[in-house]
Amino acid sequence: MSKITLGPMPYMSIMPTLLVGANVNGKPNYMTAAWSTVACMSPPMVCVAINKVRYTARGIEENETFSLNVPSANLATETDHCGLVSGAQEDKSAIFTSFFGSLRTAPMAMECPVNIECRLFKAVECGSHRLYIGEIIEIHADASCVTDGKPDLRKLDPLVYAQMAYWNVGAPAGKAFSVGKEYRKK
Amino acid sequence: MSKITLGPMPYMSIMPTLLVGANVNGKPNYMTAAWSTVACMSPPMVCVAINKVRYTARGIEENETFSLNVPSANLATETDHCGLVSGAQEDKSAIFTSFFGSLRTAPMAMECPVNIECRLFKAVECGSHRLYIGEIIEIHADASCVTDGKPDLRKLDPLVYAQMAYWNVGAPAGKAFSVGKEYRKK
Image (cartoon, rainbow over all chains, first blue to last red; front, side, top):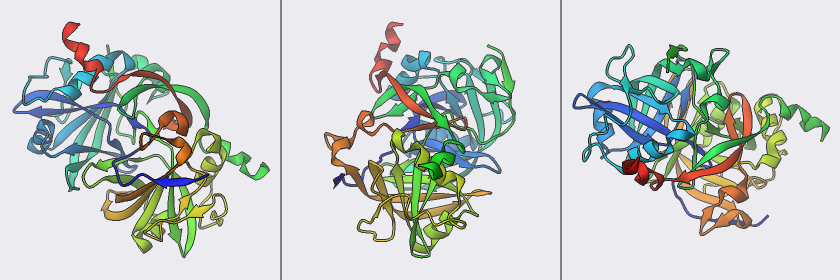
């Protein structure tokens, strides 16, 4: 193996494709985002990095609530559209059917099979981006996409984001906390 | 579509499978992690959520450096093993061949085709977990996995983490900032 250096760049192997929902000036807005993950187990939290100049950032700070919505692969066109156009230029409130949970100000997209409703916990200044950490207040899901009380990957059909493209999830490659048991036997 | 509520839980649709490298008591240690993403574009940063009680957390705080290593699918056994066993119980320094970059204290796994070398920027207390935000100082990669100066998903063969399992990346599902242009025509 010969290693080379590529220089510092904002890189992650694979990321989730999501829509960040926020009310801006009282209207639902959805922004495509991939720089997101779980931030804490207890209490459950997620985080999402958003450029400070984004229209959506304004909404998150205005209401201190937001949502992360998981689009299925069949929503790739709508999802990508939300990344091409800013809410500052175009009203994106009609792209999805919005509904609200107990926080009342975090719009969620009915068409997305999973919706994570969040209350802002902290906004961390990183540079060009602010990392918004949100406590998960509720997870809403289409009943048809749930197995044993949890969102089911195969029913959801989420999009992987990597290298400026969307990808489907492929074949299973092993159970976690399990395949490693073979390590000793190698 | 009928929505149901699943209650708050630490959920994300899909996540990257990574190994967090840190020197603990002067020895390289690798921990499996999936709660990680990009945190900032400029300067480039990543973040990773780690339980406060983890052995790896100690190393990150000791040196204020860490690495994120991207294992290929053929390293699933070694990768999962690093999530089953704590460095407090077992010396994990020999599982991979460690090398160091300019930070000198962030061990990186030679066998992983991409290694992200980070300097700790901030540790955010969230609850059970601390969210470690690191500035990317350098990206090291196997020359054979790089196309046009960037890590190439197809050559890397990274593992997706979701639902307590590893998955391969599947078929392409559209170019980002592109497929959305069809939205108007629908």
